[in-house]
Amino acid sequence: MTTRRGIGELVSTPYRGTSDEIDLDRTIEVLAEHPVPDDEDIVVRERMRTTRSVVLLVDVSGSMRGERIKTAAATVGAVSSELSHDALGVVAFWSDAALLLKLGDAVRPMELLDSILRIPARGLTNVAFPLEVAQRQLERVPARDARVVLLSDCVHNAGPDPRPLAARLPRLDVMLDATGEKDVALGRELAARGRGVCRVIHGYRDVAPAVSEIFTGR
Image (cartoon, rainbow, N blue to C red; front, side, top):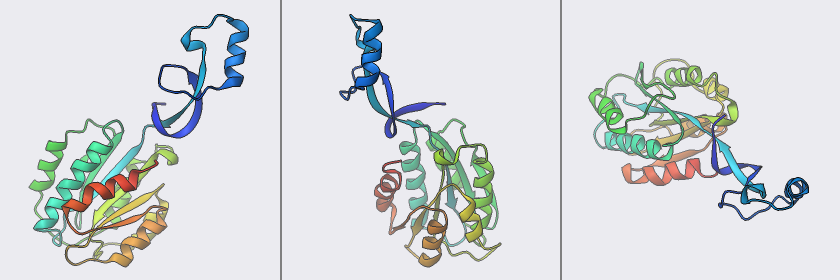
């Protein structure tokens, strides 16, 4: 399993010059065998976390025109940057859905942005469909490392009720675009069902702080 230092499980590891919290019990065990220790014989405690797997769902329906496209572009850029060492998948959706980046494939932010901008804002908004796609993408990922981020106005007007699908996901965070028509109540309920948070976005400048807040501590 791939791990990296950060906020997460506290584990014992050989000293590599990056921690000053010594694991005394483990170090004493090592010193019993090596009375004259090298640096790596000192055992320290460090936070290690597994690589995250995140599927980003981007609403490109008819209601997501104009300034909202800037918000979509900013979200792709901010999430790509936040997850530069993690696995990312991207789904664009309207009444249908398109998998733009398969989870774990190489992330090329400019190509992703170009793909999104090439999709005409069209049709109704089926929030349930991309949640199904995300669930399939994450089905082999441990729940603790898997999550979904939904960018949408949450004006769901096509397809089945998305709330039961939200509840089946390991975690669902919602970035709700409130620059036009919106359904804040549904956005908050989806996040609650998905054990995540809902952050209301009033323009593309709100994106980076919201993304940072969503991923803080995880």
